[in-house]
Length: 256
Image 1 (cartoon, helix red, strand yellow):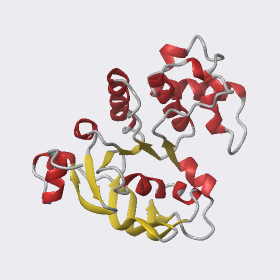
Image 2 (cartoon, rainbow, N blue to C red; image 1 turned 180 degrees about the horizontal axis):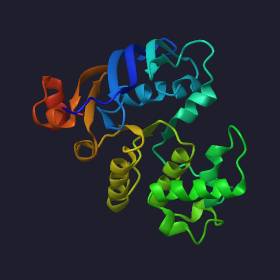
Image 3 (spheres, rainbow, N blue to C red; image 1 turned 90 degrees about the vertical axis):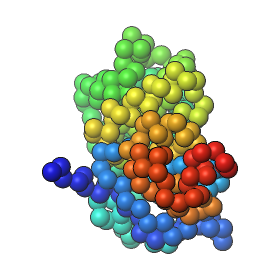
Image 4 (spheres, rainbow, N blue to C red; image 1 turned 60 degrees about the vertical axis):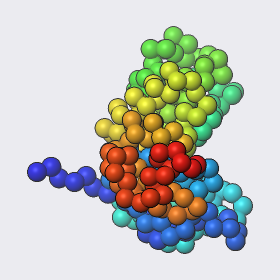
């Protein structure tokens, strides 16, 4: 009998607010380690806000606050005294549009994630950069132009560069908010293949509008609607035998 993976992240009755507006309401969910978890639902359903609560990016927007708990390895990340910078090193994030630093080279973009914390010798930085680029399936494409501007890369390459920058800091969890929505089909496939490889080392939570992507790339899927978690389960179960009629209606394209 195979032991169940440990729970890396969990929320307990999580409600996320912007001022008086409730974006996420009373969500309790668990995310086992070393799996890909997809968050799906129509635009404005709260899935991206929920994702941002998991590393406290939600607080950056004016008036952002939460009620309930967000637990990383059993510890509440909103407890008093939590080092938010250290938290975001443990829980990295990749955004919808590629966000390379325009003034930095390819190498320095990847190394940027190492600048918070102790200094590393140059040889160690170079090794970390190479490892991250290899894990992001980008090394062979850029190894001869590491000093060139990151802006010279294609959109798909820039997104994989951002993934490399995130994993260079060795987080435990990677959050991805619609990471392929601006990419062509070939680049999207590369990122999806990358998720399968990265989950061997990281826990991955991805927001996507693409039902086929969720079905292909994730181990579990959670459906959000109007700020509420409607249903969560294994991806196979969610896409073949959803328990809630709203889930079935969304997955089969009857709304959303």
